View 1: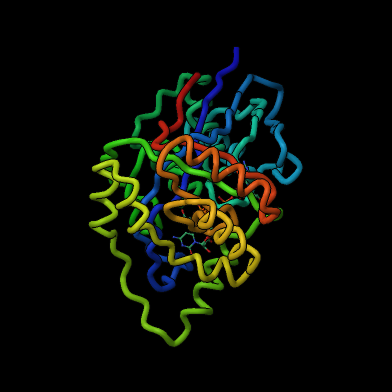
View 2 (view 1 turned 180 degrees about the horizontal axis):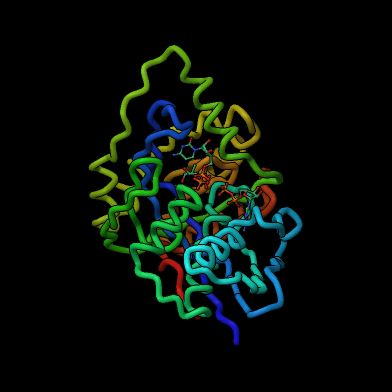
Length: 297
Ligand SMILES: C[C@@](CO)(OP(=O)(O)O)[C@H](O)COP(=O)(O)OP(=O)(O)OC[C@H]1O[C@@H](n2ccc(N)nc2=O)[C@H](O)[C@@H]1O
Ligand SMILES: Nc1ncnc2c1ncn2[C@@H]1O[C@H](COP(=O)(O)OP(=O)(O)O)[C@@H](O)[C@H]1O
């Protein structure tokens, strides 16, 4: 018997970053939107814990116990006194180290899959608690849709979304490390006042109305200058998407994936074609939003 769970990627339509905290994290106002690019995680009983991965970026995924999917299985098994003897297979379509929470998706997916396989019937609260232990982005991968994340991004408040938004994502030729981007944010902010992070009301209203033009006017990412500082070529990708007709162009989370908001599905296809032909990215993919969270198939 196997259990397969499908989990979406995310884009941060607002990422407001406060000053560094004593624990090394940053307080955020993090407006997550789940998008229709998915990893699928399959768990099957096995003699011992084993992780395999397929997909174009599979070679960059660690297959040892540092893999977030393995950590999720070990954490749930540890809480229940079980042996985490499962084969976890990750069919990976979310770019690795791309700022789209692919590892977090795999952690949330493996947790839900093991809970179903082992019949542990953890409550939603316990699942969210384990997710927060695994990483700041993991709770959102579980819930999907749209949510405001506060604290280090793990405390979620569900947001209303009044329509579909059409996105194009340009994948870069290499990844960026999330801690390195936060460190660069701190370096760039040195000596300057860093205001407390606050969600934009205009942005929340645009999401609730399903108004793409209003959303485009309100998107922001405080990590973007840091990502561009570490990966200057991304400026060329952003410019290529804007000149192809994107309503908004921004770095997704800590990057280096860049995100482009389109007026409709046909415009998204055109922008993806222009970006792919521009030579400024590895590939370009379209994805609708919002997308559902971790779902057992
Ligand atoms: C930036 C964001 C935006 O959604 O996503 P990505 O771009 O990585 O996908 C997240 O905040 C990433 O969340 P996640 O990838 O789960 O990070 P974690 O494992 O919790 O933390 C990794 C490291 O990032 C830094 N970090 C993370 C979250 C936060 N609020 N403040 C931080 O300073 C810390 O250096 C931490 O040690
Ligand atoms: N299941 C996983 N899939 C991808 N990366 C993982 C996974 N588990 C751990 N990692 C590690 O997490 C790092 C960040 O990966 P990822 O979650 O894809 O990016 P991001 O944090 O930018 O959204 C990777 O470089 C890799 O070393």
